[in-house]
Length: 318
Ligand SMILES: NC(=O)c1ccc[n+]([C@@H]2O[C@H](COP(=O)([O-])OP(=O)(O)OC[C@H]3O[C@@H](n4cnc5c(N)ncnc54)[C@H](OP(=O)(O)O)[C@@H]3O)[C@@H](O)[C@H]2O)c1
Image (cartoon, rainbow, N blue to C red; front, side, top):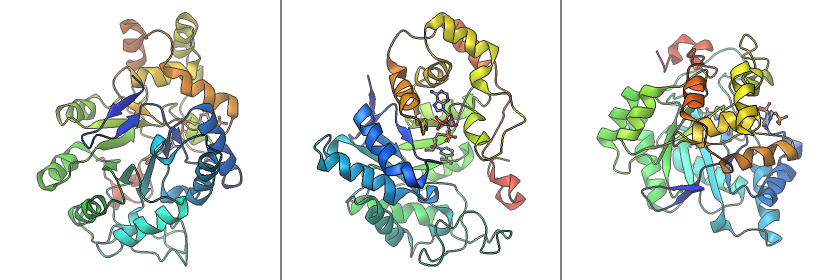
């Protein structure tokens, strides 16, 4: 099984390609190469600042007949500055224009945090801070209003599915109370240093698919000079031993640990060889239950992506 079927009937590939920190100047080529290598899901976001380039890679692959639009599953995310009910629709349309697409397969709320609107013509992507690079300007848009607007985006055919990222259990339960269209996917940080079993159990009970991001733990964060206090998971003794005994690479062990628990994964790589290695994660034998246990035993609740570290008024996981 290489995809999960969402309640809408869409088939979501279990292994996708993460676009965060994919360099703008190589993004079109990387996306094209990833499609050539067999990737069908791309995990983008307004905040990644490379949607136009990613769209160029998609266009080239379609123009050359490698794939058809309907073979691809494109995920994007709406940034915190665009939660206002009067801007959700036009922001969705703008992001689709950048990608050169008529619809997203999945459109996620990136964070359950609402920030002051920034005109994309002035500054894009706006990021967490105001133009001074220091102040965080919160806005008052309730999540429910944003969700209702996203439901209209689905009604109008601009997104096949909607979902949410970086959401805690209590907020998810509230969302389910009013959602006319239930979230199709929850995208959260999960790796052996941050296993999140209670949230996974809740998602299972809600029949909600989960995409695990930052599967390699701190490695992806080193690129931003973050997470340096934590040991590289790919070099952890337990991971390398399991890699040898299971005939997989350390990266494949970490991805397989997630997919074997029923999660989807979106590893990022700027390297042609490594992106192929990651896509092959579903091949070969399962990890043993002892291996799965040993990997989960590495949990230290290491949260690498926590907006509370930017401003305590954004303590969404407290
Ligand atoms: N929703 C959210 O808030 C959120 C937050 C974070 C991430 N995400 C999504 O999740 C995706 C992945 O997360 P991430 O960017 O944190 O990083 P990641 O995929 O966990 O790790 C990427 C790092 O691992 C390296 N790498 C990739 N494949 C490898 C392999 N086979 N062997 C050794 N090293 C390998 C990459 O280097 P090279 O590029 O040099 O190969 C890069 O340094 C993002 O791109 C994004 O789509 C979402």
